[in-house]
Length: 45
Image 1 (cartoon, rainbow, N blue to C red):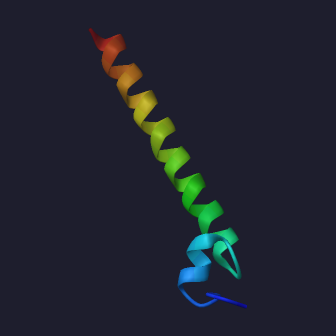
Image 2 (image 1 turned 90 degrees about the vertical axis):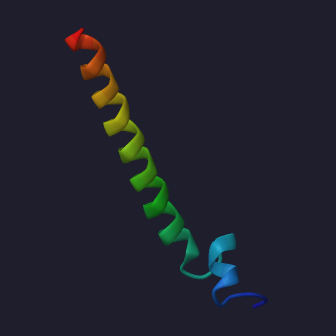
């Protein structure tokens, strides 16, 4: 497999898919928390 080690993981081969999926979930959770926080800030005013 070409680029299976390290670089290939970033492209989605090997164990990269799971890592990318977990990273995507973390980003989505952070965005949702940020949106909720901003919404609460707006509601205070």
